[in-house]
Amino acid sequence: MSLRPLARIAILLLLLGTPLAARGADDASGFISDLGKRAIEILTSPATPADREQSFRALFDEGFDVPTIARFVLGPYWRTASDAQRQEFTKLFEAYIVHAYTVRFSEYHQEQFKVAGTRPEGDTAALVSSQIIRTAGAPPVKVDWRVSKTERGLKITDVIVEGISMAVTERQEFASVIQRGGGRVDALLKLLREKLGEG
Amino acid sequence: MPLRCALRILALTGLVLLGGCAGTSSSPGEEADAYAVNDPLEPVNRGVWAFNTTFDEYIFKPVATAYRDYVPEVVQNSIRSFLNNLRSPVIMFNDGLQGQGKLAGDTFARMWLNTILGLGGIMDVATDLGIPFHDADFGQTLGVWGVPAGPYLVLPILGPSDPRDAAGLAADVVADPFNGLMRRADADYVTYGRSVVNGVDTRSRNIDILDRIQSTSLDFYATIRSLYRQRRDAIIRHEAPPEGNPNP
Image (tube, rainbow over all chains, first blue to last red):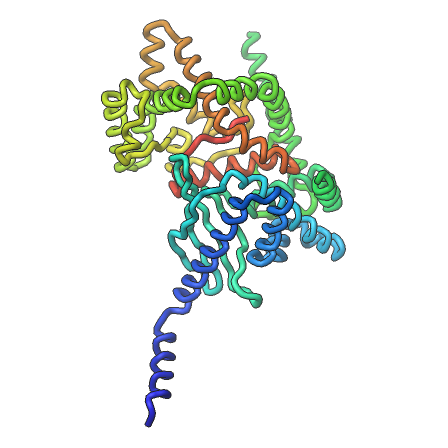
């Protein structure tokens, strides 16, 4: 009897012995560590704001579960929206979020990114904690990433900066825009179009 | 009595406002949303917000910008350290009331290190020695004790708040031993001056980030409301080190 089948069984036992959640957590941590480093690289690179936004858009498409986030941020209005509205919203939302957060986070260049720990959330999700260590002696910024296992691999569903969830903030802002527009999703779509038209 | 009459009118107006807004908050599609915001006074809040925005544009922000651009950074940092140190008794008291023994000890050590070695607080030697600043306030303490925030409020000049935080702010001002000292010395203007400098310094540190949020928001009022509520919740959960709130 050769050693090969034995080794195979040993590996199998080893894998089974590791709790599934823990393995998922390690994957999630590496995934975030890699994405975070690439994000800081983009912010630090001497590119024009437009190029930077382009790079971020690619990173966002790759790393984030855009359809799930879009559905969440529209909240109860997702149900009342038509298919055409949902499609247009998802497209506008993606462009808006990349633009808004590229601008808002533009001060985090030349900073260090460090994954601090991971906590499983159920069987298919995990919360990865990270820190952005700032240069000017300012206190580090705590950033948590909610990561889900999807059929297209690991994807981010929310970013939580110092306890403030990006998804919740956008959901509440969008709800306000729709309510002020008489409860019509079109009011939000119109404002998003205008905002993005500004350049 | 004219006063009683005025109070009654005020109470009635409040009821009408609350009633009027309760009606609007049940518009279609909005029911049972776990993320719905508690802002029944939104029309009034938006009015105060508009006033604050004008005040900020013409007075507060220009002063804060001048402070940031013309006062030497060393002086700015000394002023921030001094104000933080002056606040130590209030922070320590709230740390204690929240059951945060270690944080209370940190504040105690910081207060003496900075007052003596830091020349009355103008140098933050404690941070260099590995005891960084943290804030604590009585609104947070009430939150830790389980008091709900209540509806969102925009206070004139002071900005985003809620009944819990407004009560906490008042309690902190009254309980502050330095303010008490000034009151007894008939020098209340020192207390006001301290608040103004504190406000200008805080605003000067938030100029860029608030500009960026404003320029990228669809509804700046709703964005700040969301950020404020979430941040206060996080501070009460003690998940992150408290910092200054955006206060336009």
